[in-house]
Image (tube, rainbow, N blue to C red; front, top):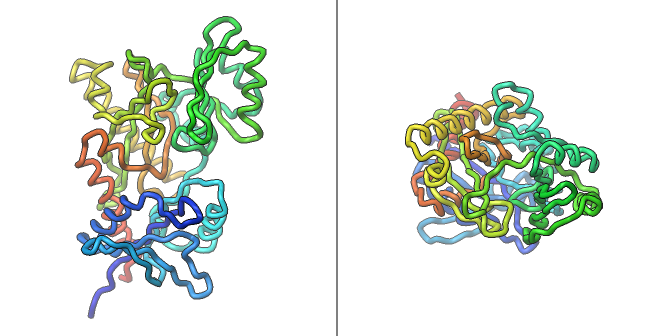
Length: 369
């Protein structure tokens, strides 16, 4: 009797209505690696689902021919949800799909917004030392109170990704502030001085009815004046256990307040950046191990709190004293940071680990006993 091959469907969204797939090259790699592991992998979006027939017009990749094609497929045994938040009809279709098929085996469920995740982590004393003070931007009074406490405050969209819509407000005199940031289309807003009387109307205009948080700014400028942070990727492995896959440093472009690669940032090995604050190797290793241990614990705790997760990227700031801060948690991380930082091993594992985990899930939770 032939044993059925486990099937993983990667759920994603089209970038636009022309059916251009985001992260196509990553999925090619995943399908190719899946074949080697004995896992049948295809890609689909909510638009590709025929609800009446319970069939999927799936995107199939043939590594031998290096070609994509379409094929009607039955529903997979497991779903790896790679959909990022969009403001589009496609995202509304996704919400309907998730609701209708919520009883299927998902490797990962949606994580909550930045504010909810912050509050969840704040509820556990273990993580409090790593959390920069954050508040909901209800009105300008909260932001004003933060600016009285801290010289720099970041205003971030509650659901933003890729550094979009972030504003940095820095106090440079009794009533004078420096602001700079990135619009929602990632366009850099050059630094400008504002008097206190003009700052409040500016912030109200920036918020324009959307939901934002205000977060204490951590000093992350390098001697060159550029900002930097760290991207720590933790994933479930083939034993169903959380593990660090890799960590890379990111340096923002000149005049940018964020280090995101899509916004022109560059990736470097974590230790290269850490040496600027911890030239002694033992101190460097201690900081790194602390960051890795904490990141794995955060992933496990958020999974306990919100349901299935299989990978998370934590954006970390490490200040000049070696103190670690969690800037945000990203449930749908890209992988290019490891190629750009010259870490092909971490890049390889970033592709393969979710597949190995899918096989573990199939064996322990899906396969008929």
